Every structure is written in structure tokens, then in C-alpha cells.
Image: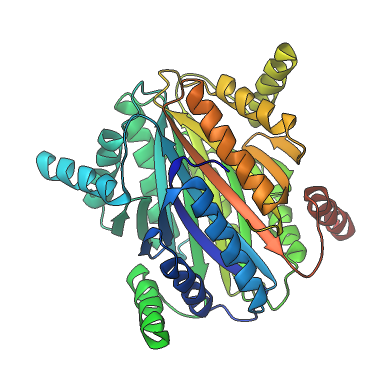
Length: 106
Length: 106
Length: 106
Length: 106
């Protein structure tokens, strides 16, 4: 499996639950992410996970499988995944760079 | 134009810039978002904007146009947009609900 | 509202429907798209819509509103939206260019 | 690695290429997809790949790595990934079901 470092931002939604609330589902997902060894950041539209490609997508697949085992019949994930070879950059680095530039332009 | 309240999480990337760095572009985008009257939250994989549908997508279109005027030839946006009619919910509400449930399950 | 021509690929899912099947929902959405004057292409993971920014996002907002009126309480859309100023390009153009290059490399 | 069958719709873009045209890049990606044993469908906003989770994401990671080896410094992928346990459904099945329902409502 590919080992390249990636930043993967993921929004998972369950389909067919009978309730418009998804917070129980998101809590189940977020617990699995936090039990892993990968660094992650929760925000209102998803969670960003950082790490080697194989670890990140193994985790995401296991979360789909785990959610199915917990009774969720259908799951749809929206992902934004970035890789680059010019430098190592964390999720926090990306935010810090923009905030610094915003400050400089004020 | 539709007035329904929405949460729109947007990640814009420029194509054809000759540089793998996108922070100047993201800073340009983020400035336009913050100059608007809409509430927004920056994170490492995008920005979440809250407000009436017409205001949100007018702003996003103007940002595309503004970036083109600033020399960016091609722009690709990834968006996650949610609407619901059962209750009003802000971006912060969504995070707070999950964090509270995570706390209760520890 | 911005008039810039865009290609918007959209995948809408209903949340809280009680059934894992979404084809009734997608059919409702697709009918509204086809009733509009905008060119569109259905595929298994969404529909690509082409036209001026204001027309495209007015349509998409109306589809959200129409679906709510039809009893769908919560809707989540994933969108990929592209604009460019170097040339006019339709969705079909994009596919044709790649297929031609694939043929040339065989 | 998880073996669950999934449908993954992927749109990859290169960042920092110096040209607004991405068809050479998409052709490189599409060739790798077609060299694999996985079923796929090209459309104007991406490619849908079907198969076991581990095979699909191994392929996608290898494509990122291969593109980097071919000189693309930064790559951003937008993915829509679905899994379900109630029935097996191909990409073509999804389109056929909607087209049939559209026909019935005309």
C-alpha cells in the first residue's frame, strides 16, 4: 500500500437512518478516529486526518465497516485528499500560513 | 434566488499557477469572505460559510470572478452544502453537539 | 449575481429518510434539472450542470427547496465547481480531449 | 485492510503546473485506472471506480505517487465514496434505476 503522507478531510453521512440528526453517527466516527494513532482535527463540516496514505484509508475503511456493524446500512463519504512532494506540511501549518498572511494584509 | 439558510463548506484551489503553494490564493479568498457580512470559519481544508443560499452563492461566485481578475486563470471549488428544515443549526452548534456526546461516552 | 460560466458537478443525498434507497430522491432532483434550460449530464455519482453561475446556483437552491417541500427534511450536496477564463469548454469537450489523448497513447 | 465493496468517484487536479490545462494529467491518471483490474467509468467531472475498499484506495494512492514521480508536485483529490450493506449495486445499476424512474414519471 502507498505510504505517501496525506491530508484527508472527510465528511461522512449515514443514509436511511430515519432521523435528520447525524450527531450520534458523527460521534461514533469521531471516537474511532481519536482511538487511532493519527492526528486529526474536527470541524463543523468534517474531520481532517493526517498520516501515511495506507494508515489513513485503512482507518476510513474500518470506520465504514464499524458503522455498518453498528446498524448503519448506507454511508456516503465526501473526501478532500492532498499530497505534495515539495515540503512536509501539517493541517495546522496550512491555517497558520494563511492567518499570518491575512494579518500582514490588514 | 432561493433564500433557504445553508451551511457551505468550500475548498478552492487555483490551477495553472506555476507554484505548488496556494496560500496567497487562499488569503485572497479568505479576505473576500471576511469582508462579507456572512459568518465563516476557516479550517485547514476549507472555510465554512453560513447564511441564506443566495448570499452564500453570490459571494462564492464573486470570489471566483475576483480571483480571475487577479490573474488566476482556472479555479476549482469543492463544496459541501447542507440545508435542513427541522431546526436552525449553526456550524458551531454542530461541533458543540458532537463534543458534548464525545464527553459523555468517555 | 455572478454571470461567469461554470461547470458544476453535484451529488445530492437526503438524510433521515428511513430507507437506504435514494433513487426516488435522485429522480425528483433529476426531473427538476431536466425541466431547466441548462445542459446537464447524469452519471452514477452525480449530475454535471453547465451554465452561468447565477442560473446554476439558483437552480440548485430551488432543488433543495423543492425537495424540502416534498418532505425531505435534510439534504447534503457535494459539489465540484470549475471556472476558467482562458477558453470556453463544455463537459463533453473535457471527456473528448481525454479520450483522444488516451487513444493517442495506446 | 478493509475489503468492503465501495463506489468511489474521484476528481484529481494537479496544483502548480504552470498551465490551466489538466488533460495530460487526467490522461495519465485515467491510464493507470484502466491498467488496473477495477471497473471504472470516466465522466467530465471525474472517474467512478468500483471494487473492494483496499483495492480502490491502493490504486488511488499509487496514482498519486505515480503522478508525483512524473513531475506533478502537488495533487488534490475530491472523492465521493459510498458503501452499503443492504444490497450489491454497481455504478451502472444506479444510473439505470434513475433513468427507469424518470421514464415512468414522464
